[in-house]
Image (cartoon, rainbow, N blue to C red; front, top):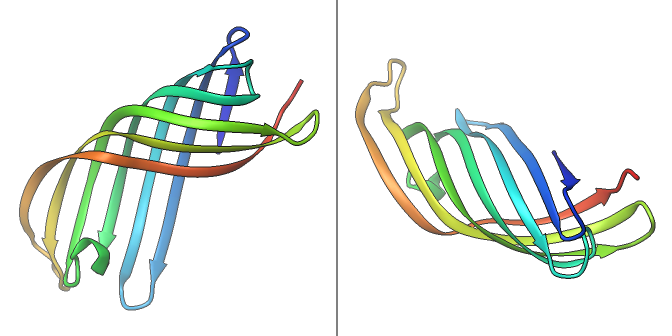
Length: 146
């Protein structure tokens, strides 16, 4: 969910958030949340056509037994902070509706605790990690309030 406000004819400011509380069978879970704020420069006029943005992001996660992250018998819990660039395009469908597509890439610093699975899972280690690469891909249905 997010909101974006026009600052002038080619500049907007947005804030958005995500929340994913998914739990699966077998004590597997993929839970995360994030808040992202972004300044966008529109090459035509706001909410029409291509844009480039600069963003900051903060969030947290709790992953348990997710093979994609090599967590077959472990749990990782932590948070992340980062920044980067967004490239996007907004297509006007009607006076109040539009479709926005974007690709974001940047830097994230993750800090997490790694736990061994079990009834009384114990902390194995705490680690920090840096990541540079794709951060987000989105297609959004937009309602414009005038």
